[in-house]
Image 1 (cartoon, rainbow over the protein chains, first blue to last red):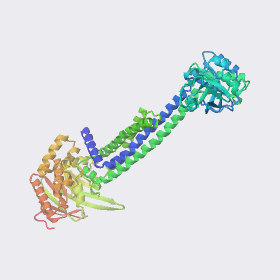
Image 2: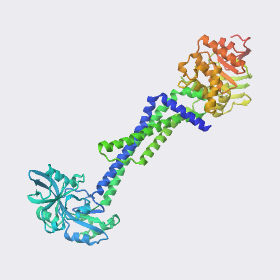
Image 3: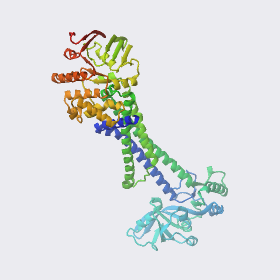
Length: 408
Length: 229
């Protein structure tokens, strides 16, 4: 008997929704946009998080970088380092390497400068990096053609260069084999021995690598380095390694504390954590904005249901006269509200997934639809229908049959 | 059997109390055909609402088929209406978007009767009022007389013991009104208890017994032949 009545109120609700198609659609539209927005925006937020993580991981794995200069917050992203006075010495490199194979797998000192590079009639600006053969392994950035700087190149201070993908395009617009070509950097002639893989980030694709010893002789002079790229043996030892390097460097540089240090250490883990935190906040923010639109959709449902109850006051009176109990009337209007919100919710899921797909397909954005957000948004839509449909349905169910029958 | 003993119904209107019914006692037996007449404000609508279990008396007793219904709550009253009373309204009050058949099924839905059985009963009742060929029309597609027949079929569907009609011919032309009154007479002949509330003396006279109400009291209660408006 209960089931029978549920089936009946379902039938009646479907009929009543069908009788006011445009109004029902507009009502469901609010929920639809709300649910769609939650799913799409959370997907885009997640996508941003994943893509930032991927680009951070592409910088290398288990990476620590010691920079010269005053601590200025942690950053693995290359900044304009030309004006930084190099503070790191061969002794520092030896100290890091000496921390042992349990902690450190590789070290590559590096100094950079922004210089003009010329080839025949073409010229471009490159971030010239002096480093050693360990660099590609630490930064997970390898030559795709030719070779990287070798230990022999470093020892002999050879004037050889490995160019980034963008530099290749700038200097060889017609294509062709660059190996053996001679380019001029700050007036010194270098032989190209390799081309780096494309990373998609302009900082990496406009770089140009030469042996660190050559860099010191021709570009900056001196024997110190701007930074040390260090690869830890595993993620687990990174904190310990960071601490050891900090203590040892303070000792070697004869400094009392990090407040007055002439170096600072950036830890990839910290940065990933920070970025995850920021992206998480971002996703939450987008999600909340979307949730507000879902709330507005719910209020739309309430509004229409109140109108519908008022319009159908006489019908309610007739039903009550014929034997409808309060709960029958309540069930009828509640079912109607929930059908509207479920319908809106389902279409909203489709829209959300569609928008997120379109963002990937047509705008090239990163987007990850999380199943959680689909279920949460859909569930929230149903609850919205129950909650905002509840009050109008309750009002309908409490109508006095005599007044309702007399209502004009 | 309808039995009202010293039934009073007071309404609060702000500070003052309106005595819509003031100590009404009457009995209507099974199979009677009674009309209730009186000018507007006389209390006849209140009386009809009470008899129809749409309202409860402030004081007094009301027994419907031996069951004391004066102090029942909302849902119990809904049950009593569903089982014992059929309503016919002046303005038909059919649901506009559903067919005649589905309108007739409505009280059976609330009685919890399954769909197949419901449709069977509804068809039979529609046939009884002479409308089996209009079962699948919506009210818009029916004439006034046909609509009132659907409403009567709906009132009959739940096999009530009393049919309560409020100005049943008020919205109809005189010829159709006569047809509806003829249908009522026929139903009464088959044993249905009929109570017609009206202000129209010609309609009232068609019953066997006329109860005249004024100022919340029964003014006269006479066989139709002896009643003078």
